Image 1 (cartoon, rainbow, N blue to C red):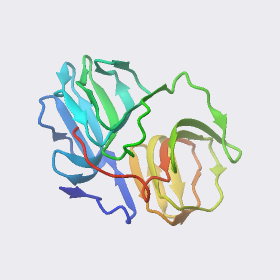
Image 2: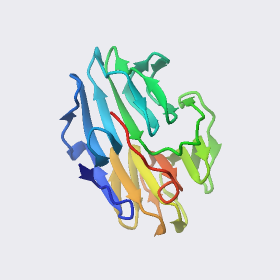
Image 3: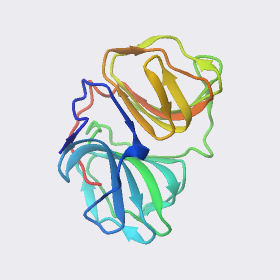
Length: 226
């Protein structure tokens, strides 16, 4: 299966327009934002767990990164509430489930195998930092090599300068509306700008975004399950 699999191409997906697709496990459904492969695949998805649903124990041969959007997502390592960011390195293993239901943004088989640092950040409690321009605040989540991952909050009326993403950029809009010269991206939009792309982002109404940069030309993409 290939969905927006060409990393050299720009992609924009309004996730609310996508159907929920059943996974192999009852009660676990996915909205597929990008995918390159079958059940084992390089993938970016929204994954929804119904109450008392679970996924089989599995090893992440290419690593797993997720952000909890709603509910409480769990495994044998802990319970992860809304806003929790987690990275499970290449070769890690777990048995995920949700007692009361949860929705997560998850990325699979997109990690450098040398990046073996597990990460858990409760973004509701972490300290934010001033951004590069007035109106921006940033919560760094992870950095390895050229890859940078963060939450970025845009105050209403914030404008950023034109800039080039040498290693590409991915954005998921968590709140509000993000924008650039190519369009408006409301809550739930997934956006990929390929390596070398240039844009001038802004937000008239304000927004909160998950953003990853520097990874599309250098990361060792492999595959995953979820």
